Length: 453
Image (cartoon, rainbow, N blue to C red; front, side, top):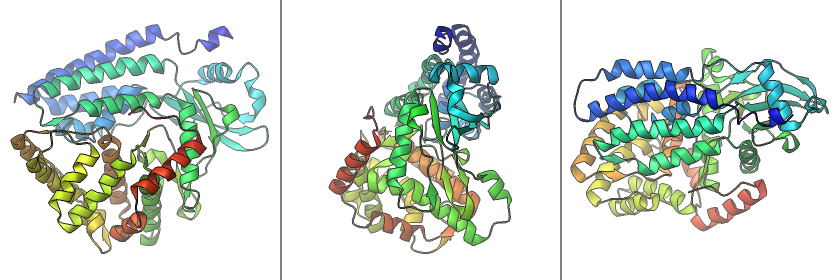
């Protein structure tokens, strides 16, 4: 039993092997990123593809961190961002021997008495853990998410590797300064190792979306949840990939997109909370196109002031109010901000907010075409060089990632909606103080630990 309890402290050899593999890959990244900054031809396109293959074979944080960074403007050269954005966990799941040891370590020698049935094979495998389907003694169907062994050590090792390589990139240019971004990334990724925190996020989302019938959230089973084991209700549904391959009517596509919009943005503008990983694998589609929202490790609680800044920026762009836009960026937490810098940022923001200020039905491609986005982002990047650069706020990381991830989902769905009216309904009567009170009550009721900000 003692040996099982030390399941996560016996991975020294594994972590040394991991360090050798990742340091080689990331050392090559550092050299090529440095060359990219000073204008050398380092064959980075080919290396980016190789890096994607190398990281895809690893369980753990480095893959997740690289995927996150691929969505942050200026954090990586385009060829790296494009390759790493498509990273998926494809390492094989751990076998039954590991599963038994993990379950015994978390619930004790007689862990199987809690279950009528427990699948030997994982039904899903991700970067930090794998999921097994089971039936509780009382007949409830559940999903058991088990963390891989040695993830704590792997997390710290991988974060150091990631910071070293990307620090070299930042050294040769500071147009978009990323210090706060990396700090945010590390804090949020460390939180993902705490499955008791994730259970509190499930409770929080069930509270926030209890009056949103188009979205389902699994119910956590507290008595069978620990720091490295999360047990929650099983939700039947089809993968987004299989849904997209089906012949869906425009009405069905719109219904799924509307549910996604509500699932992500109602928590933001009513409670100041965001699910930071709108990855296609993190939701399934149930009966009547109901959205099953999954994987609540990457959840961010924003300050009410920050959310107020997001709403103010929308209003400023809609009304052409430059001064209000400048104040909104300050509320977001942008540093080294001049009015000239704010004007440059407005070009990206106008593109970013365009679907929300367009009062007609349209597809996301009509208003936010990815090809146009690349052109605008390059122009903004050049403009920031001339104005002295900017320091991105920590909160920008998951807000930006969610917007990009959702935009991709809306594009693939081909949904045609009036995004403006949906957004105006969400922010009707918005008040920072009201949001603050609502947020405090929800976090307390769900038992969410304070975030490291």
